[in-house]
Length: 411
View: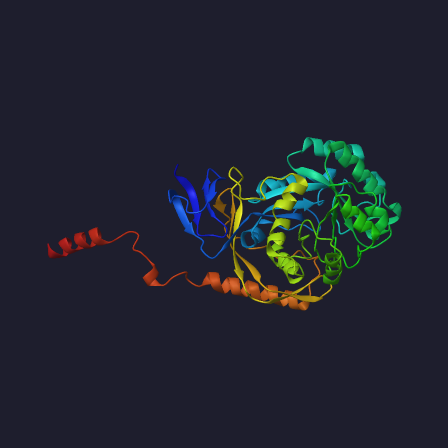
């Protein structure tokens, strides 16, 4: 067989691609391919799977493609941007995206059209409607998302979570629960969760899940998800959890319009924050590939023959890098994970420029200045001719025309 693409010399193996799937993995594969790419010295990973993002319509959503091509994230799980009323809008995002988009349905039918408050009116938390929406969209929705904090639920306590769990049980899917400012109490939230359910913002400096309830939840199979976001991750909380033997099962960004320009930036940067806390690179990679695939039953997450040819090429640079959490605490990662290419179905993602932030997104003066500087740099780069004359070819040679002109002049 002649493969479509062969990656050679990478860590850990050569990888062959045919018809959008991984066709062979091994050492010294035959060089019988239409394109052979030498990736010596690079780390080849499965396409990263970000278990908590916001790419749907509404207050928080961003376009995934401009971030995916430089970050290695090939599967984006939208965590509750859409509810039953707005699922059609998320469908349009999925249709337009180059990357894979899967989702968790918000138990509130209005989804995240606004900043918060979607579960203050329990009429929005309609269990039969949520069940019907998932059943009609099994290819898209792989679970239920419920945000439980004081602002979101108002006086309703954990009732939205109870309704989310009822809908999830009817559809045999997990619940992802966002934790934050009490009430309701963290223990009351965690005690309701079942094996396979997911706690996002698991190292939150606001919720600070460090007591009995989180230990018992993890022991019975509740999965801990990092869910960094603009307020959901604190180094000191994570370090105390690691010391207690509690490890995030999945590393996700909660990448959205308010975290994209900092403190999150992207998934490789978030992964480096775990490296800064002493988590080994193989464990960090598993938490951003195989583990999220298992958590939601998603394709991909490995480099196995027959899998979709979603993979990322990274250079691991030994550069001590200071990184900040959501509360501006600093830790230093021993390395940087620098993405050099991202492939979906065996095809490299093309460069895409991001849209400017929406007018309602709060930014510091420094962030605004950096965005302005980036725009100027991009304009300068694109307005400069790509190559000089030595880099050009004469696409339509004048040889025959010169010959004709010479004959006319001589006659």
